[in-house]
Length: 627
Image (cartoon, rainbow, N blue to C red; front, side, top):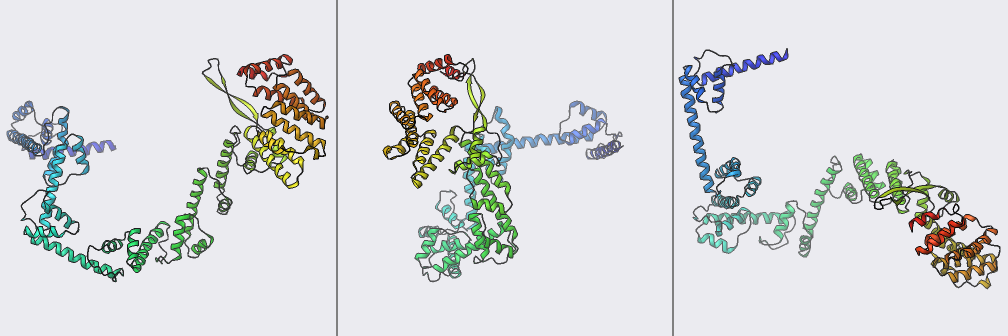
C-alpha cells in the first residue's frame, strides 16, 4: 500500500515537472502530457545542458515544435560561446600566472587550477592547502608570483590605510613598505625613517606615526601609574620598563630576567602586583580544574590556593587539607585528588617500583585494596623473574612462595616449615634438547625443586650472614662452623676460607668443633681446586673426630676429583659406616661429573660408574650425551 502511494506521488511530481518544462520551452501545444512521453526526456536533457542529437531535433520538427527547436539552438549556441569565453579567460590566467603548458596526464590539473587562479585574480588570498597543491603539481613559478603579488597587494592596502598613496613606487623592496609594516605592528620607526617620510612629502603618514607615539606615551604613563612604577623616571618608549608593563597588562607570565631588571630598579611594588595577578590567574585555572569555582575567595592569600598548589605538586592531600575542604563542602576536590594519587601509585607499580608502608596504608584507608593486590601481583611476578622461578604457576599474592621470596628479598630468615615447603615443592622448567636434525630445537620440560638455583644461594647467604653475626655477638665458634658451611653452599668458598683463617686449633677444646671447622675449610679448598690442601684438612678432621662421616665423605670426593675411583669408593663406604646417607655420596659423585671440564676424563668417570652399577648411576647417561 505504502509503495503504491509513493509511486503515485512520484508520478504527480513528474507530471508537474513536465508541465513546467513545456511552458519554459514553449511546447504547450503538444497534447501528450504523460511523463513517459519522448518530449519529456528531450526537455529534461535540454534543461540539464545536454546536447541533443540530430534525430531528436528531427522529432521536434515533426511535432511542429519549431519555437522549441529555436530556443534549444540558441541555448546551445550560448553554451558554446560561454565555453569558448571560459577557455580564453583560463588561457589568459595561465599566461599571466606563468603556468606551463599542460598535456597528457596533467590536463586534469586544469579542473582544480582554474578556480584557484580565478579566486586569486579576484583579490582573495589563497589558503595554505591551495599553495601546497600548486607546489605539489610543479607550479613553483606560479607560487612565487602569487607570493610576490600578495605582498604588492598588501603594500597597496597599507599605503591606503596610512595615507601614503601619493608615493608612486610599488616595489616591496621600497623603504616605505618596511616603514608601513612597522606602523601596522605598532613598532617604533627610526629617526632616519621619519626623515625619509618627510623628504617624500608623506606628511600624513608621519603624523599617524606621531599619533601612535603619543598614544603609546599616554599608555606608558597609565601603566606606570597602574602598576606603581611612577618612581622610575625614564618615560621614553625605548625604556625596558614599557614592554615589561605591557607584558604584565596582557596577563602574560613575566620572565626571570624581567623580575631581575625590576629588582635592580627598586620596583618591588610592581613585582608584587604582577606576581599577585599571576597567582590570581593561576588560582582561577586551578579552581576550574578541581571543580571549585563556587568558592568565592579568589585571592592568592586564600588557603584553598595553597592546597591546590600543593595538590598540583604532590597529588596527595594532608589530613588538615581534607578537613578544610570537608568543612567548605568541597568534596569534589578530595575525589579528584584521590583519583590523581591513585593513578600516581598505579604508574609507580607499572614501572616496577614498590609501594612504601604509608602508601599501602593510604590505599587501605581509601578502600583501594584492588591497587594493593595489583602491587603485590606485580611484585610477586618481579620476584619470580629475579629468582628464576617463573615456572611456578600460582600468580596469587596469597601464595606461600610470595611470602618466602619477600623474606629472601629483605634478607630475613625462613621458618622451618617454609624451608621444608621449598624442598618438597617442584616446578617445571624448560630444557632445550636437540632433535635428530640438530639445528631444530624442541622444547621439553624437566622437574626441579624450588629450593635450587638463585633461591638456594640466597637462602644460604642469609644463613651465613646470620651465623656470622651470631659469632660476633656470642663468640661461639659453632656459629663460625655453621657460617662456613653455608658460605660453601652459597657458592662462596672464599668467604669460608676467610672466616677459618688464623684459627688457633690448640685453643679450641672440642674435637668435634675442630673437625667441623676443618671439614668446611677442606671443602672450600676442594671448591677452588686446591685438592692437596683440602686432603690435609680432611685428614686432620678425621684425627680430631674419627667417628664423624663428614671428613670421610670429603676424602671420597677428593679421590673422585683425582679420578682415583677405587680409593674414593673406600672413603665413601667408611662414611656410610659412620652414618652417611648413600644419596649424599651420589650427590658428591654427580657434582664431580658435572664439574669435570676435560671431556675424556668425564667420559672415563661416567663409564666407570655405569660399569659399576648402570641402574644406580643411570643419571650419568645424560652427561654422556651432552659430552
